[in-house]
Image (tube, rainbow, N blue to C red; front, side, top):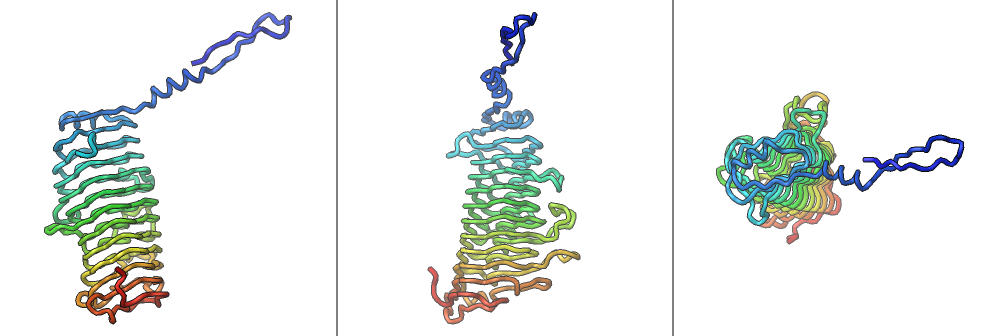
Length: 372
């Protein structure tokens, strides 16, 4: 990779000529490009898919032709992998299996334009391989359609454990047993422009759940329709040996929920063992029992009590025939640390009874006028 050029000596008394190395940068670039060039693999049936998964290398793009494929695929430790539809307008369908796909320790993974349905465990399972203090980073999930997971029990559309800098964008989830998206010990992540619709016969508990030491997560511009008892469960209840990072003293911290539409369900959002967050700019329509819940389910010594959430600039439409208590407050919490500002409350069936009873005084609230 080097070219040798002989130069005459400047001193005539010297018997030898100096030899210098001159890098040939163009040749070096060609060699490096050939080394790092990623494989582009196209599969058109289940057999070729299984073979391709066995042969995956870092940087591979696996493009899957339209058709039906079985679930049950497992990938470990392949970085910079992309799994996508060959034809985004006609994505492949992965049917059945415990998980459609399980990715363990796959850094900078991208999965897009797939359909997933009928799994008995989780639709997608993504994790850190059990290395709780070494998160997997840079995963992107987009344009996925996931349905009919479970149907009963703790079975999630997308299960995420120990992931940092995760992005989930433009995904549709319909019918699941546990959570549409369950995040355990995830950080600095974004869920945006997704749709969550519950389905009869499926025991959904939440649309999105962030727990187990999760922090700095934003849930925005999503639409939740009857998506479990707690459409957005900020926090939760996690076994002490599953927190990421180990030793975290909160279920969730600095969680932002903004600009979503939340229809139906027992409440719009629950805050459970939360240490700081925001619920801002959302539209809440017809919750069935409460509007919010403030709870503490992890009660081990030293754990933060649920506290310090800003609830601001939301449009909340409800019926007094269903909602008598606006906020369900559990023991071991600090509800007085919640701040309420500029929310628009409207009891459709009794507008004069629109003003809620809150754990702290609201600033600039609007009551009894239809915000629609």
